[in-house]
Image 1 (cartoon, rainbow, N blue to C red):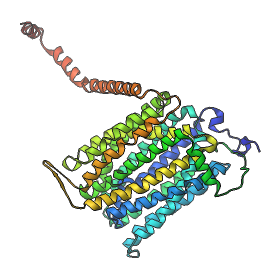
Image 2 (image 1 turned 90 degrees about the vertical axis):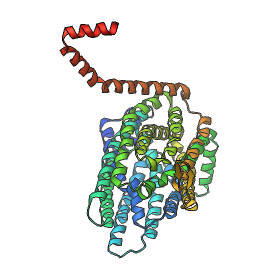
Image 3 (image 1 turned 180 degrees about the horizontal axis):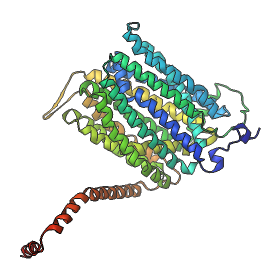
Image 4 (image 1 turned 90 degrees about the horizontal axis):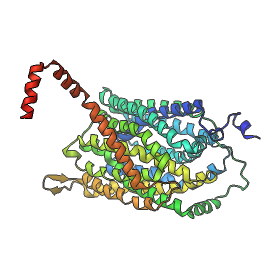
Length: 490
């Protein structure tokens, strides 16, 4: 059967050479509904949800670690994805069940309110593990599918626009979710139940727009029969790509450093600093806004000079931010500074790292390459939260007295996170990207453009003062002006 027939007579974006306008619109609508759903069930709200279910710091880290263990299934799922002819059908097949299962997360706090479920954490664990395994399969299939839809030379542009849309919508719904939890007068259990129910409804709506996206490259039928013995061989084959292996080592090391402290940042704000969900998510707006402002800039830099320079520049800056978290207890406004810097850098880092995987993985083996990367990242994401929880529990209530500052267990963990983020850049520097620009030259270009933006912003900010000065000068009598000039000359 011709490919045009198998895809309903519609050419894929890759075949057409550019992304059709309707496909571009559907991609933006799909990510918009995804970011109505995700902020209501993640971040600080998800942390508060687990605290409501009764999780301690160690249990919280353990739950996150167990969920990350699903990454071990990546090779099996990658084999399925590689062999499946239509990535769109495979993605849709498993996307709906995971969205329906999320309604069970809304049911847990409701059952607690009705005193029908005294110990909800074991049930949450079962649901979370099931969703985590499905997410591994869907992630690989969606990754391969979207890689076929969007033309390679335009990925920086399209993913930047897609991320801008998602960030703008996510910013609004994160604040709305926080306001709902803080301002509603019902029992917290019922508030979380309603919020997670609404989030699950948006997830189903997101699925409907996912269905509207076109099919990607339709592969010919697989010649070899399915065999579990073939999976290790495929992973071994991928591991022989030494250049790709360096990128995988970086991703794993970076994930460990990020997850070690990132898992507990919102818990620190909620438990230790007693911040409300509204305040936390309002501060997070700074990060989202900076991400939206800088997204197209980083997309343009990545398309022109490569993804590696963008990852190195933004990664080095992001390595410093955990140190600022250690002083948050003495200056809450530091959170705005952190989110300002992190928002500008994470937008570029995430965009470039995603583009890098799409670029380096051969299309016919994309799922296998993704699986190899997923295993390494999953291992790091499994160990790091448990390690962070063990560190917090081990330090306990001990305080390190440093004259003007007293560091508790959270602050000490944040300082360790600085080392965990600086170390991975060693692997990334050894990685070679086709067409990459010199990182020092790109860094100079970035500094120059940032300086120009700051200069323009200051000039704009000083416009009112310039106007006032000119207006005052216009109303000063000529005789007084002459006296002023004579005084200046003397």
